[in-house]
Each structure stands twice: as structure tokens, then as C-alpha cells.
Image (cartoon, rainbow, N blue to C red; front, side, top):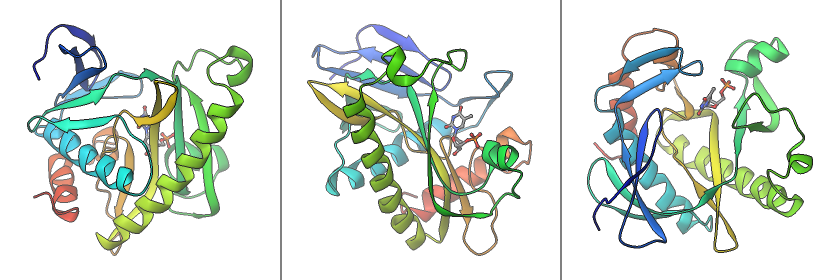
Length: 229
Ligand code: TMP
């Protein structure tokens, strides 16, 4: 399958049309932004890590009963996906306090949550309408998205435990495709917080957001941990 027209260019990816109207090709870049694009940079090799790791996770989740938009990995940076209509919500699942939740609740980073915390954030932060009132998603869609998000969390906690990694939190997105809700977007060190289980060292994009150094090394280490390098 070949890339035809550029449909969309985001901060970290480009999306192209293909000869099949049901499919698109995503191409992962090394560009990184944080704080709504205020901070910009490059993480060398990030596109390859995110493409390969996300595809690996989506295949694992499919095997465990979560429908996803993954079709076929073409090469290190490019993947064929089902062309979904993105549900305009960022779904966040948290197992330990970190980032904005630490700030909001006044809890030190790493404080365990008694139950997983599920949050829905509007993709466009400027909008403050209720999800249902604004028609971003239906009640049925919210129910199925919540169920999938919590199941994805359980599958990922177990998987990363084997890699000696604590899954602190992550952000996922969903899409609509032929009447079905599918997991879409990516699962990568850009969208998850991964801490080494023994040392609690950060192995994710927080190293870039917080100018901690060792960013490329952290992404490379996660590839080793999951057996892709
Ligand atoms: P937060 O603590 O900053 O709200 O982030 C929660 C999780 O969501 C964390 O794993 C990082 C991820 N995330 C994204 O994937 N994209 C974003 O734009 C932000 C702010 C967070």
C-alpha cells in the first residue's frame, strides 16, 4: 500500500490517504512538543520507537479482545490503519499520582491510587461543554470506552510488570469505524508514564517535558524492556 495525499499533519505524526478509502497510513516523526506546543524539540529515533511499540501493544490488546485500528506495519515509521473518525476525547487512566493529578490533589508523585482513576478530557481544552450535551460522544460510547479503558489498563499493568516497569498512567484515544468503537492513536512513551520498577527512574516523555536529559536513552530502554531491541 502506498501513501497518496497528506490528509493531516500533527505534532508527532503525518496521516496519508491510500488507494483504499477505508485505510490510511500514519507516519511517525521525531518532533516533540509539550505544554500545548510551547516547548518544541526533537527526540532522535522517537518516531521509530513510537511506531513499533504502539503496533506491538495494539496487537497484544487485539489478542486480548480489544478492537483496534491497527492493520499492518509497513516499515519502522509507517503503519496502515483503519480510517476512523476520532472521538474528540483524551481518555486518561491513572494507577499512581503524577503530573497534573499530583498538582490537582496535592499528592506527591508516586502515591498509589486505591482504584484506577479514569478521566475524560476534551481534546480541545477550550471547550467546557459536557460530553453528552455537546454531542462529543453518546452514553453508549462512553460506557464502552470506559470498559475498554479499564481492561486495557489491566492488560498493560500485567504486561509491563513482566518488563520490570510500573505503569503510572497513560492517555488513549478511540475512533468510530463502521458502527464500532476501536482503540486508535498510539500507546508509547509519549502517551504513558513508565517508571523502572526498582529505581523509579522515569522512562518516558517526562524526561523531555522536564528537561531531565537522557530522553533518547529512556525511549531506547523501553524498546529493550518490551523485547523490540
Ligand atoms: P497529565 O498528568 O499531564 O494530565 O498526563 C496524564 C497522562 O497523559 C500522561 O501519561 C501523559 C499523557 N499525556 C498525553 O499523552 N498527551 C498530553 O498532551 C498530555 C498533557 C498528557
